[in-house]
Length: 299
Ligand SMILES: [Zn+2]
Image (tube, rainbow, N blue to C red):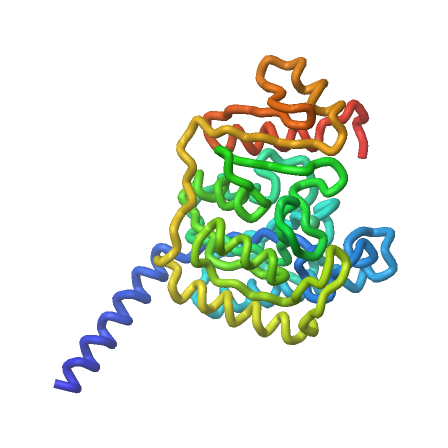
């Protein structure tokens, strides 16, 4: 009996790996920077900061930890989107030949551009942060810390992790793992569901945290990536049925005032506009327009 059981199991594994190899396993990785181990202030997060070049290395290394773990777990194709600041943070020469990298802006699908190519089995967030409406978290914000004070989808608070999960849902792709500080991981798990979480630091305040070392962070990210891929069929797709209502609140009410000149927008209070879109592609395109529009052609 034991032998038959073993043979049957072996056969099932062979059949499974066979279908796995035929279909392939396509993983999408969206990379932000506020949730990288050790990042606490603007000094690490933008080109003017004294530690920015080193944190490009750390961000690349955390992303590669997920990339390599995903390949080891059976991924056959990986697309990475550089989705922080100028979108040109990752050191692209460090990536293996079989990874494609999405860079810079604007992109209608923002931090999830590339998913529209189709066929992805799961999406991973690296270096994410909690939302502007969350009570804690290093550099907690939504889309723009300088300009946006709130974002809701269908009346529910939508941080970047939730907003992006809803974009992924439009393409039938579940979020399977997040790395970031404890606030980012907890908020994402509360809003999206039981995804794997790699907590790489614990916020004391907006600009202070206790952090894992980069080496420990990479190890944890690799473990959680493998754990997520091992149960990739478990994760739920976050699909919002249209029409979808987006409420966006601005620090300066000049923005809501001027947007309300357009028939597409309702100004629902002094600082907030409402847009009703048919799906998340529509919503993301409009959000990209609002946050990216400028009369200046460059930068
Ligand atoms: Zn960012």
